Length: 398
Ligand SMILES: Cc1cc2nc3c(=O)[nH]c(=O)nc-3n(C[C@H](O)[C@H](O)[C@H](O)COP(=O)(O)O)c2cc1C
Ligand code: SF4
View 1 (tube, rainbow, N blue to C red):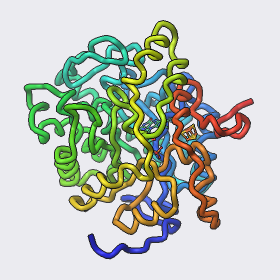
View 2 (cartoon, rainbow, N blue to C red):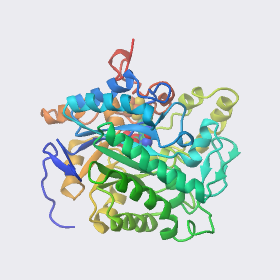
View 3 (tube, protein in one colour):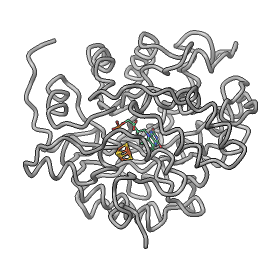
């Protein structure tokens, strides 16, 4: 590792064809505020608050590229009818001086949790839905890849600055990368190069659709966080292939699985009781009994993905976004000094949407999030930090 460079996180930076006012991204945290699968006024308030709070770019999440790509009830489905609302949210964020990205994806096996059967690379039992998913066929792959391209075009038309292709957390494209979830024997299964084929096609289709009119990012797992899942050597190989395609402006490094091991993504306390309460009976009781197995707690550490992400930084030229437990300004400065191009913050900004502006004003306090993870089950009723009083929550409506 060379001598660390000092980069001011509060100065403008380029992300592909767009310039951000600083190096801070609001990480995707599904807001659970859509109405009829469309942008709502609450959702606009939520992202206006994030933008006013100082981020360089906020991320609207999660948007399904097609109807069967939803991973939770009432997510935005990108379609022509959604464009006017998407334009309103983009305008509101721009008026606060920030950029806006949209996380687009297909939930794949995770969709089984919504009562849908769920599409996966191979037929598999979904532990969340207690049923088998359906293996996607060649026509299905072409349909989904096309849906990624159409979604990106619609977001461009709505004035978005960027799209983030979801290649993580056991969603469909992540499931293709995963040796455990992809057991195909055709050209889309087997070696990591073959398992990366569909994710690469989706990213290429997005880039071809939008050209240089917007930035294209991907969020990808460095490790799946469950036995038999993707490991660092293979995810590095996938990242190298994505880099060689030349279609990405940045790669955001994550880990964990919404399907098999969600807590790996977050670290900190496991909100078993709060999650149980989010489900109807008899799932509630089952969750109380079995929850500890599904949600093992991992101790929280500042920037918990940084040691793994360094291996990607050393191997790739592609701009990288550091994510996961970033709570301190000194962590941000250190990461930029090590060659990461941006940092993404999720929970820290749910807790304090204006943390970036405060840092910029000279208040160097650590973020106030305590990693209790009680915000996670709130995604079913409007995502919020439980420590923020109701009338101060972004997107709150009396
Ligand atoms: C309430 C909540 C909702 C989330 N929803 C999404 C999502 O829709 N898509 C996604 O990729 N990650 C999602 N995440 C994960 C975050 O983007 C991020 O990867 C994770 O919280 C770690 O970053 P942090 O320590 O800064 O919070 C969510 C996290 C939280 C807390
Ligand atoms: S509920 Fe609030 S304090 Fe707890 S993890 Fe979520 S954002 Fe942090």
